[in-house]
Image (cartoon, rainbow, N blue to C red; front, side, top):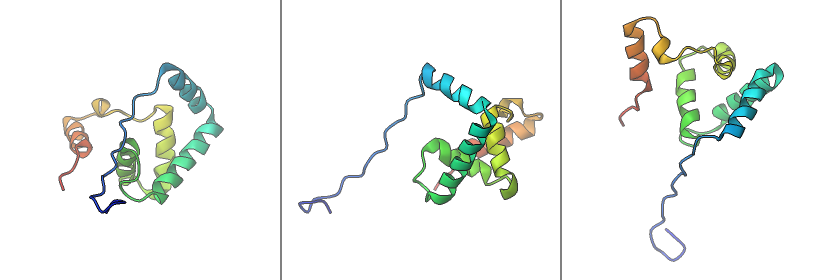
Length: 111
């Protein structure tokens, strides 16, 4: 209930707009430096582990779902590879079956 007994309004999450060219340039520079990339990857891992489901932005929620398929010991290295740009895109997967599986896993699941 609200302050005066009415229904409580649900808060909507603001749509995030894509970063501008200056932020992209800064991020590109930061992710080239190994010690900053490693620190960022560790920070992301801690944040994803501590946040309850539904509290993360959609991008990180998707990343969390993708990382659950990777063994726990290799998750941080997978994040670092993604930050470097070494991860293959779904279009670059070798076979048609692999591309279709990647496409299916990227779809939102029904409740």
